[in-house]
Image (cartoon, rainbow, N blue to C red):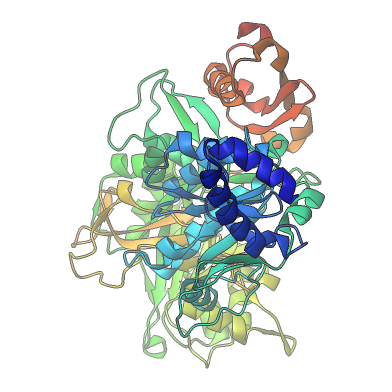
Length: 616
């Protein structure tokens, strides 16, 4: 080996023997310290590699290349990857993101996917969480949603991912944000008092040396991860007449802000024929049951009561897919009064239905409540509701969810008894969709106190939908103007999934403006829907039930386009696929690129003609 190195370095440095000797001496020491004394592959690492003269990294070492959200020198990065692939040096990526929105993190992953289409990445793709953890403008829920978004989209493409960061960042994330124990971590020692307790397969010591305790390249190869054949790329949509960023965001389950950010369009309006990129992340399909589930919201709506004194129903119809109306409330002194039926609910229910907006109802209990007393009150509330609606409007009760709103937790309540009494009364009047509302603390306490036949159960063990207050921008400062946020500027988050329950609806703010409904401060509650079952069939797409018959594959013969990079071929087909609703997968099989798409796109009129390879 030493003889071979000497020949290569003589060629590399050329010229006088003194220069050759000096060059060899320096390189020999570098290699001797880091490799010749170690026989294990992928134990010593670097964060750089020379693209012209590699005098440092040996084939048994590994390289971790950093990607910056602020922009890389793409040409240099590509040459580094080419050098690693050429020398068969294992290489991984470290995403140094400064993302503060979902749209930003999706674009980061798209960039990583574009590299995987061309280069072999046989080590993990690490998310460096330092930027997220140190961003003081993000709360814990937002930080968690960014990390979870990275994980979900990466998992959809079968990427082998890990977490990276300082000892302090990883430790604080594990303690306060989300568990990292399932991930290999690249730990950057920072001489802090923290000592990360999770798995740190790769460690950068204080002196800058990088060592790995595991040959991750072997594990990734055995798992078949980081394969370009399994990437799930973003879809393209061609804008039609009457499409707006808001309507598309609602249809595809994003917030308008993130859809605009993802498409680098902060303020412009859509025109017919514009191409809109859609992150293919939001819905997953169970291959056994063909059921669709959503990781992000499928609809946005508002909840209103008699506090909403100003309502513009035309505007409400523009901003909201559903409206949940308060019917009645019982306050702290329920023993001293018969309860309060809200007369305004009749007009609100009528206008919701007349404007073709999905309807929900809720009843509020402020504190302790006797079960038998509440049953009587609830029956009276429903009787009055039915009487006052009379025959003026028809309720599709099977599609109208009804929620019991617990404003605060009270240890005196038998919550299982109250909830089941509520459900039984609702069912007796034809309402089959029943749920519970509260903030995270109240819901957790209620779930912890549930007992069925003396045995502990949790909310997730019941059939109640969960509507939770306290999302990303939720504020308790209802009577101030400090937190006003326009509905179109709302930041959506991933639905909360805890140990005891999973949210079906998340209330993300109570201080939104420009919704069309407002209190005397101009504010309104805004909610995101995550479960398509809540409103019956209103948000359920039944066309997926025979999904295996709706998948078709478009094949592209690579041999015809040898001089064209894969990503350019795919970009072209993305463009001519007349707004394919979803590209399920892109695979390279032999000498063909195979793109799987849903026929549903053609049913909606998004694909105008069948795409053939001959069109290129």
